[in-house]
Image 1 (cartoon, protein in one colour):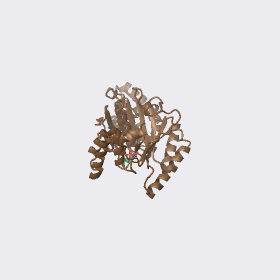
Image 2: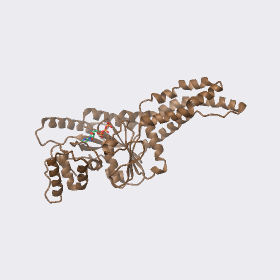
Image 3: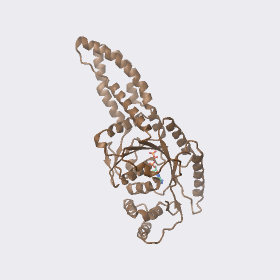
Image 4: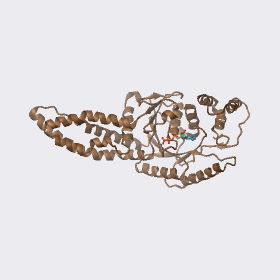
Length: 409
Ligand SMILES: Nc1ncnc2c1ncn2[C@@H]1O[C@H](COP(=O)(O)OP(=O)(O)OP(=O)(O)O)[C@@H](O)[C@H]1O
């Protein structure tokens, strides 16, 4: 079902969608009184009142969201069926609309009766901006507006790593060194230092921050207060990070393997000393913590690969560069066995009814990129969801509902 709009004006979309959802749009307008000039606002409201009459809206222009049928991939209905917990990860190139699509999906889930959690692990959070509510703080924050509970969680990946590092240092750093020095075994700790445990946390490999943040969320999700959530939506950091994140367990395996070997040496030395002097054996908690992180990362990776519970949705825009990047992303996700079914192609210019040359050129260019998608060996098997470019920023729950109703069908 499409809605009909004047050329590239969201305001006209507001008017046409008002026919189906005038309440939401009235609320949207009350949140955004400055979007439209005053005379336009009055026409808008006149339209809303007209929308209950039999007079049809002006159909100058059609804005459509087209879901190309891909074999065996069901629509939004399949995403809301069942009450067992499901995870949706939205990822793609920077600035293509990941946050908007993720927030719109979370609103739609909540409005479909699913208590939903939307999580951002992107260091440059924009969930607060997208919902036009303050969701910062690193804890669960209720989002006002949807019918069922919707909570947001913005995890600051750098802060998560910092917390991890501080605890690791407090428990394992100098305490262990002093103890081992006292035993004349400081040299072993120096060797541990050479394994760059500190450096690993000070200058982390790309993706480690987000890995720690996601591991933290997974840990949260195991606690009872999170039991209620049946849908979890992740707004992830741009492409590269997500990919590196998947290879982190292997990376940590390699680092931790070395650390654990040394730890064993130290443990046997200290237990010998302990048996002679009755000293208390101290643990290298930094290594312990890394090991636990690795275990959690393995869990995260398993979860990412579980077809029953998880889906990674790629978001892109119709440009050759973005399409090529999405193609590479899909290839890498496939290699990592992460289930992908849908591709959102966002910000598509509707066909112009005016003689705007720029719009016509731009649209031609976009159509070429759409063709590229159809012929791309990586992307052609996906369910392609085309979403239009609207003429104002999508902010606030009513606007997200508007976008969600276009994208998620
Ligand atoms: N279909 C659309 N029509 C108009 N504006 C849009 C559309 N989709 C997204 N935007 C706008 O584009 C900007 C970027 O969107 P968004 O923040 O969702 O992208 P992102 O991929 O999450 O970005 P980042 O990689 O920086 O996190 C925002 O201002 C958003 O309102």
